[in-house]
Amino acid sequence: MIKLKPATGTSAKPAGNTRFSASTITRPPTIRPPTMSRCLLSVAIASSLLLVGCGDDDNERFTYSTSVKSVATFDADDIDDALQDASAIGKAVTPDAKCGVTVEKISYPTKGSAGEATNATGALMLPSGTDADCQGDRPILLHAHGTATERYYDFTQVGNLDNPAGVRATLIAANFAAQGYIVVVPNYAGYDDSDLDYHPYLNAKQQSEEMVTALDTARTIIKQQQAANNANYLNVKDSGKLFLTGYSQGGHVAMATAQLLEQQNKPVTAIAPSSGPYALAAFGDAIFSGNVNIGATAFAPLLKKLTKCRGQNIPQSNRAVYQSICRYELAKHHEL
Image (tube, rainbow, N blue to C red; front, side, top):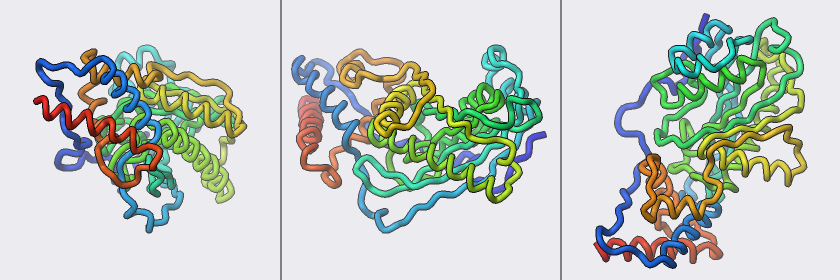
C-alpha cells in the first residue's frame, strides 16, 4: 500500500507559468556571423557555463541548514504498479521490484554560480523489505537528472505523474531503490523549494560541488536517523560503495562529479554517464550556429538565462567572457 505523507508542498502543479523565463534567441534571416565569431561565441558560452552565472547578494543574509522529511512509502507491488502507469515500456525492461521504497526529501545549503548562498532539495530513496538485497550493507547510487524546464521539478514525486519529474523519478526508484540501492538525486539549485532565481545549467564547478554536498548530506542524515531509531533507516547501512549515473545534462554533471570526488580522494565504485554534452564548445556551435536539435528550445533559454548580461557577481577574470556574449547579442539585434 502506498502511504503518502501530507503537506509535502510539491505534488500539486502551481498556477501560472513556472518555466524559466528567457528571451527567445533568433538568428538574422540573411546575415551569418563570420566563422571565427561563431567559434569564439561557442568558446565564450562554454567558459561562462563553467565559471559564472546570474543571481544577487540579497540571500547572503540567510542561513540555510539541512533537513529531512518523509514523502511517501511504497511496497514492492506499489512500485511495479506505479512504473506500469508511468511507462509501460519502462516496466517491460525493468525487473520486478524486490524491495519497497521509502522516499524522503532532503534539504541542504549550496551556492549559485557566482558563489552566492542558497539552498536546494533532493530525493533520498531507501530500500525496505525482507529480501537480502533490501537490508544490511547497501550501495549508494548518486544520480544526476537531465534537463528540466519546470521550476517545480521534484524527484521525490515517485508515482506522481502530475509533477514533471514523476516519470523519471518512478523509473529510478524501480530500477535502483527497489533493487536494493540507496538512491540520492539532487533536484539542483533553482528547482523545487530552492531560493535561487536561476539554475546554473551545465556549470561543472557548481553542479559537481552541489552533487557532493547532497551526497554528504544524505550520508549524514542516514547516520542521524539511525541514531534516532527512525524505523525507515534501521535496516539499511551505507556500504561505502558509490555508483554515479546521469543522463543528458546529468551525464555532464556525473562526469564533473566523478572528477571532483577523485580530486577529494573519495572512492567511486563505478560511473555511468549517458548522452551528456561533454564538449561544450561543440554543443554551443550546434545550438547557436544552425545545427539545431530537438532539445534546443529547452537548452537555449537555460543557456540564455545563465549568460544574461548582468554586471553583478561577475569575477574580474571572467568579464571578457561576458562582454563577448553581450557584443554578440548587440550585433545580432542591430542586424535584425
